[in-house]
Image (tube, rainbow, N blue to C red; front, side, top):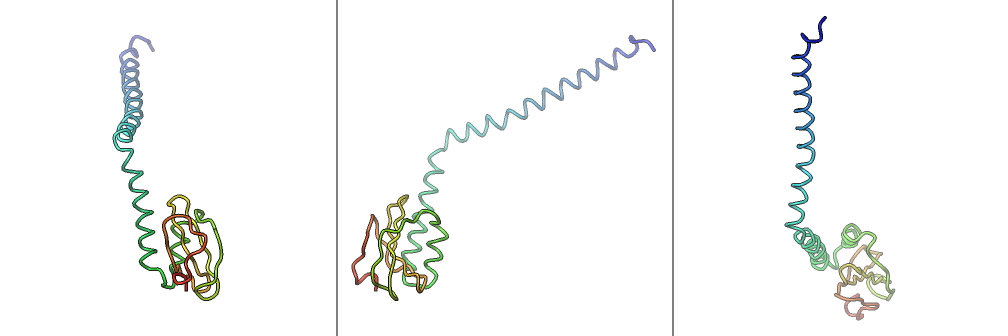
Length: 133
């Protein structure tokens, strides 16, 4: 066979190949530019949403304090963020003051009944006796 007779076919294949590769390259870079443009215009909404979620969780725990299962909510929402500060008499024996450094809130927790008995803003080592009974 003669190469001159295959020349139009090879040229067509080469052009289609370049167009295909060029299209893939353009499509693969376009989403990156769009994502970075969106991230640059709205960075504060993500931080506000996280803060709002933590505040909502604290409000729910405060509303449900004294009810069985409040400790489960506390562990689920603030897993790994709670630091024990102290132990004091209250509840059905002893209660533990657990401090959440990220939100600057202290929870008083009774493990006997799995109940949060007190919530206060700031770092509180011991709560007043009337709050944890």
